[in-house]
Length: 210
Image (cartoon, rainbow, N blue to C red):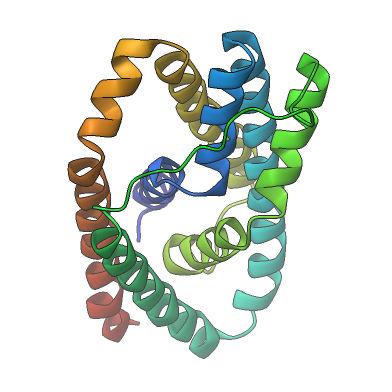
């Protein structure tokens, strides 16, 4: 796979994964609603840092292993594709479930720094994030990736994660866009599931080429 295509595929998959509702999504929306738009922005930066951390671990760990074991590389591509298919099914099945955002309580963040730290911890403690990053890198990262891919991917991952959650903070700190998004949540989830499913099928079907 061409390195540029691999990078774009990784970023696209991470963007879809970030956009799918989960603990990080709920935390940012809750912060933007219960605190302020600025707190939502701080939380978005925390999510970006958490994503970049997982990206660094994925790049360092997988590069060392995959360079020595091509059969493992193929197996991880298949497993990564199967996981993306599973995630697609889960997104589709939960599309009609409403997002429950708990009312603000006394333990909510009281400063921008606290909003940032709690968001980073939420991202790092989210098992879905760890699995998604591992699957995506295993699936798309070339076995012999050039060294400069680290310098390109990590800032790009930060921009994708932080950029998406900044948009979430903007939308959910305003009443009308928030209501519109919640009304069309099922269609958004199904679209995200369709993209994940297409990526998963592509990976599983292309594994025999190696």
